[in-house]
Image (tube, rainbow, N blue to C red; front, side):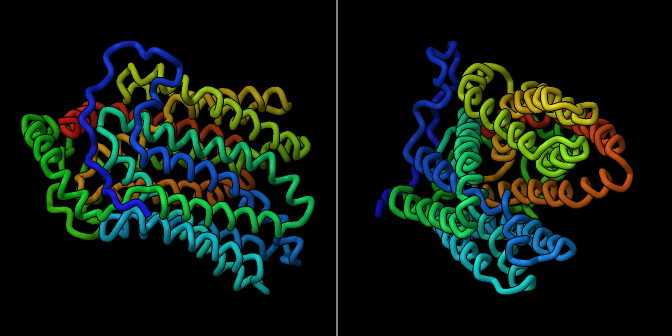
Length: 445
């Protein structure tokens, strides 16, 4: 097992010249970044049980009126795991948190497969999603520890690219394996989780969050000095450049940070909108009487565009300020998702998916990088845990409230109400832009 410590974020200056080749944004990263990249690709190839869970439950005799109990339990785990993962990453170790989450995920896959009734299936589903979502905050904190602030945007985009590469491969494997037995889905899911755990245990440089925090004090101190000049301006905007009180050991450090407190709900609105592509989009396709293969085509278009374009887009867009790029990408996502309301044919759906996929490519890595810039060194895991938890809440609401509005009030209320909410969130983030930029400048020293 490797015993060298994760080194502090290097201070490589930002690139000022045009990148020399299309993949320039993803070059020059240290070992820890590529370990997480490789492990994420492997793990996401096994992302199979979730998409086929409804069919598996049916094969086990779970009735339609009982299925929501298991699906709701799966969603509830997304509300628990990020908070626990972020806290453990700061309190103990990024590496151990990731390993524990991955081993727990593999065990939960087996428990769900052998569960004899709905109650035990629900318990296993909570455990599955909770342990799986423990991993992200610790991985994000590791990226933040290891990469200079000027390159965090690219590092988080690389992480997102890995997710989409693995998901695209899973989409190809899933249908084939399900046709030969659902046990193959569970076996591959558990196997890839164990493989990622082995990669983390043997290849990821060791760390202790406290030791990383201590080594980062000098960097954080210079960032704090740079922030002093912006205190008055941030106060006038109703934000603060650093949390008002010491980090402590809980999530109070995040909620006392006025800028994070304002930014996270706005991100939550946008994540809810994106999550509708997993819940309301299939409903719309089914309502129009289109075959299930239309949803498969939509997923293929999204995954194909992101896998093909993410490195190129990140390399090109890294020359521009993050906040304007993020706002432009958010507009594309909102328009693409909202236009689902007027799509009724397979080509029309493909066009809307293309539009929001281009937005997804543009915003890749930016939101997580902005959250990383807000966090003091000793609270990076909890800030990323809060961000991942915001994603979990958004997905849970998209699965519950979003589909309820669609079915009870009507599709038009969902799509156009969503567009209005997106406009409000984008406007809010734009208003916070100057404060975000000042905090980012402070983080970069």
